[in-house]
Length: 335
Image (cartoon, rainbow, N blue to C red; front, side):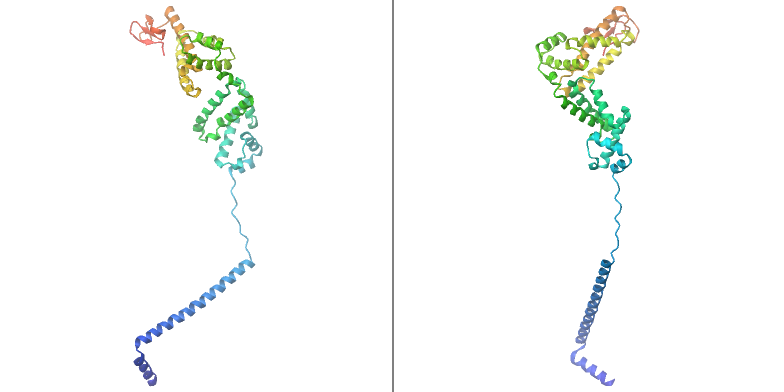
């Protein structure tokens, strides 16, 4: 023991305490390196064994079942109806989103219920009903049907392409194409005869306005199956057959006039005509003639009565467009 202490003391004396510490730290790092190398070798072998075990004993993997689309479920439940729907739309519904497929299917189901027929009969029944009208009016029918799609979108909250109106427009265009150009006569330049008839109807109208009115008269002629020269009489006779000629019901005539005037302004931009030159504008002129004649009749017969003081002492104002009470100054019977 004394010799060891002497030797250790001599070593410290020869090399110093810091040299010893340095050697000790180096030895620790060396030992740690050996330990980490052993651990790395061990874990690497373990991983290889696990991989080999997995390859030799593969386990079955189960994929989550794929959920069915709306159309897949619908077609599975209603194969016949699904086929009819795809045929009418002329589309492969498997390519559509769930929303479009559902909206298109529901649209045809609504039509089927409203028209009281099967889905397969909708197109035939619809076109048969349209064929009651002259073929030359197909462009107007296409235009008016197109406008209905916006109302349908708002009511049912569906896309424009999924509306019944969109489908009907498609059918009308197909039929119009099959018929050729039946509306060519409506857009043709005015003939001398047409111009003479228009001048007899509207003697104080400018030439450019007469040309527009001739187009509207042609549409009316096709619609009512009546020659242009007979349209005014046909319309006035129809009005008088629905109106009993009494003062109590006279108010229906101005109300009808207001409605048609509104429609004239509504359709004018689409027809590229002035409102007064549309079919509605022309009928407003003819209805105005009827109202003026009726006012004279009520004035002469003493039926016109002031709605305020009930006096029959009334007169017609300029242009015969309304009455004025001589007692209280109230104006009535106009627009």
